[in-house]
Image (cartoon, rainbow, N blue to C red; front, side, top):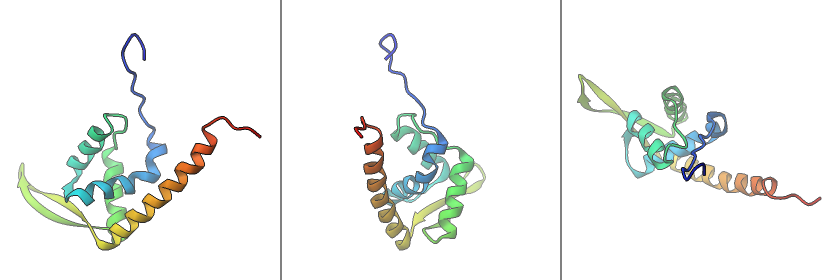
Amino acid sequence: MTDGVKVINMISSDVMRGYNDTIVLALLLVNDSYGYEIGQNIKNLTQGIYTIKETTLYSTFARLEKQGYINSYQGDKTHGRARTYYQVTDSGKEYYNEKKEEWHHVKEVMTLFTKEIKL
């Protein structure tokens, strides 16, 4: 806190790169959605600590779709063109569960190195 104001430190996109798949899948498990809405949900849920870049988000969609973890479909037209919505596939649900398990292991390891180490 500085002068009673909480300082929010942004998380580096490099740090988050490996978790973007998990974040997007988690949001799509709640409901089908489109790019802008997912980006805003990420920003809002993290209270602005993490804002995903549009190019990063769409490359995440492309990678997940290529791997068969999500499908895309055209939704309603807004401002003259249809929005592209994304939904999780069954293999995407399995992948999400694997990534969740992996996160628990990463967290355990990082906890060991972010507390005082006694050798």
